[in-house]
Image 1 (cartoon, helix red, strand yellow):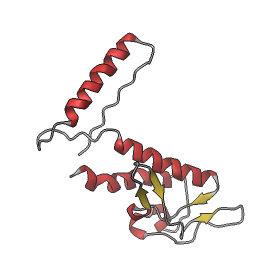
Image 2: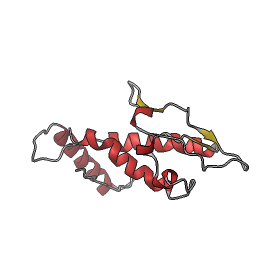
Image 3: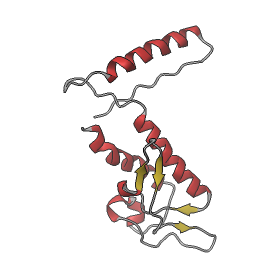
Length: 142
């Protein structure tokens, strides 16, 4: 189970500054708690990792390249908490004449549209959300 608290604040607003102060106190306190009946605090790590994964994929897609084998073993975290996408053995550069119908990648982690050999579609992006939930599940249950 995971809960996300979203707070929108304006930097030039006194009420927002007070809200941020209270939020920081809550984060400090919550980070010190560990009990089976209290939701665990993960900080912004999951959001940060997700942003980095999506940023790396967006870069590839912007260069007309698809990784085709995104899975836990191919996502590395360096000592500074930076995500590195790895293993480009299945990657493909897409051109006007190339086809995305080839069956490449790890079947368990593959988008259903790809596994059904229907080719790449916009809907494949939704599979990333499912993949991220699965990828972070073990970490969330610790």
